[in-house]
Image 1 (cartoon, rainbow, N blue to C red):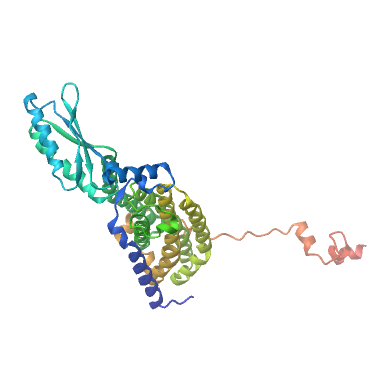
Image 2 (cartoon, rainbow, N blue to C red; image 1 turned 120 degrees about the horizontal axis):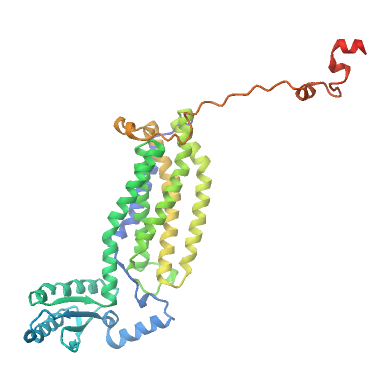
Length: 399
């Protein structure tokens, strides 16, 4: 039996968790958005046009907002006053560079006002300005109208806000499903909890590294990133979905071998060694292949593809080699036999699928009939069933 020292696995767990939490610190400043033309390669026409417009009219010209007022419910005599007041309010805002003259349709039931911020589309100040402008909607509603803040910049802010708000529910759903399925598969409560916590650490570390590089601007020269900006709005959803599937695959590869060894031997410490020895190379090879595939997208010029490739490649390497190949065996060694237990109420309601086949009857050893062919094989060299040596004394006498 392999003996484990309790101190060494504990040190491994502490070092691994602290390291992953340190990588996850930048994720606290995560901002989602759609990258502007400033993040395109500097030799593209999109980036050049962005720079020219910023130099000529200010950075906010690339983030122009459109205030749309539906004035049909406002009395005709009050429409001009309401629109004029609406124009004066954003003009007094410190984050606004300019406000265009209102433009109305033929029957004066719809008015459009262009608002130019002082900051670019990727700035947090522009997002704050959109929220402040929308705070004027109740005042317009009192007069009988409806205020909308639109434009490409406002649409990108809305999409990012919606996706960011859905992330907690998205993570909660997949984690709960994983806990249920892994509990049924391994008939354990601690093993699924460990798998879910490891997955959350991998996600946090991956998002932290992505924010550190693409949002905060580190390693821009090495990765050829022209400008730092918010993380692509749908990247966390994609990262969580892909990394969850790969992480649970690696978890099942490792822990199923541990479970199988434990079911047949009852040796919890030896099961950890057997599981890593049996599946460690498979997990390592699979992770390296996936990281190579995702890492190839880092060399793409498109900032969206580049950030997705970096996040996925980094996440796969962290999850496979730090979480699954390092933290999982250390935690299993610390838990010992406790890892394979279920509370009695939960044990009664959990289906026993017996994936390892521990409850199958032992294979019976079939008796081999003594056929003529087997007798011939048992005869001395050079003798056959027809020779006197094989036929016995009586046959020899008869000959």
